Length: 236
Ligand SMILES: [Cu+2]
Image 1 (cartoon, rainbow, N blue to C red):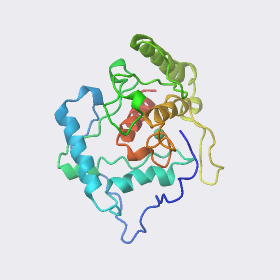
Image 2: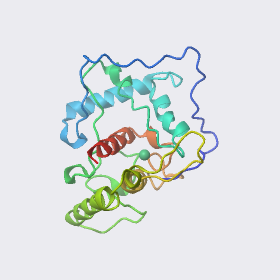
Image 3: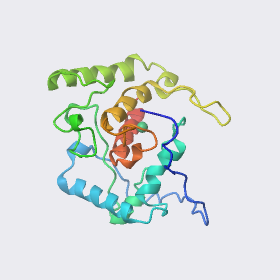
């Protein structure tokens, strides 16, 4: 994924805080939201997700619950940090369903290795093309079976072989006052980064949306991608 400053004209700082609302820890008796795998849910669930994203996009851009502000969290804070705050599950309460959670993109399982069609992504990576978990900019000419086999080997290499210790898996500590970019972990390097680039659009000047830090979270798939990263951290 491309790092660096957003293009000029892109302003992603949060609106100035007037009366900031403090975070309230949810009532422990409230329903536990469980993320489903995106490829396992039906059309109704995807439609509900689209409805929630639509409601967020319809809010004024300076509303902290709006899709613009949620996407800007990544643009403003995540260059050189690994702090993926801002998953908009709470904002999706706009749809009034206490049990809904954003699905995760299960790209490490064969059935989850393809996208839903979206014209704003790379034309050569639309379904039925399978994701290439260590994509380096050149599309492999593999059969589906070969690609699945390759992807599963990448997962084993990055989660097991290259990650025998927490530091190798999660990356180096990053504390207040440290120089930026202390070094990421095995999963963050691959497949996290290559999937961003694979999902972005080569025909855009800066590989928007998913292929660039400033714009990645403008694609709703960003949240499903990072939900799977979080899940695999937990599995590890
Ligand atoms: Cu990311």
